[in-house]
Length: 183
Image (cartoon, rainbow, N blue to C red; front, side, top):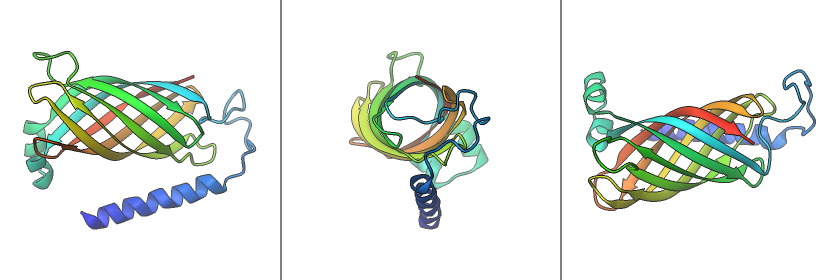
C-alpha cells in the first residue's frame, strides 16, 4: 500500500513540476477553437457524478466478489471555484440511499489542480470534510486524488477516489466518475 502511495505521489510531483514550468503561451491554436486554455483562473464549474463507496473491510480484503456485493452506488452534484489556475475550493452533495434522507453526504474541499500544459489533462488532489445525514449522522474528514480531462475549455470528464475518516464509524472509500461544465 505504501509503495502505491509513493508511486502516486511521485507521478503527481512530476506533473506539478511540468505544469509549473510550462510556457503560458498557447503553442497550438488548433487545440482549442477559441485559443483559450482548458483550465483558467477565476473559473466556476458544476459537476454531475456517479459514486461508489466501499467499507473498510472490503478495502482491506479486495476481491471481485466483495466489490460486487458490498459496493453502494449513488449520484450527486458539485460546484467548484478556482481562484487561480491551480488552487480552488469545492462543495458537493450525493445520495446513496433512496429510502432515507434526500442527501446522504455533503462536503467541502480545498483542491490543488495541476494542468499538464494545454493537453486538457489535469491531475488533482483534494482534502476537506463534511457531514453524513443518512442512517449514521456524523462528521468526517477526507483526502483524495483524481484526474480531469477537458474536451474543450467548458466541458470535461473526471474520475477520483478518496479515503473518508468518520468520527464514529470505520474508514471507507468513495470513488466518483462524472462530467464537469466550466464557466
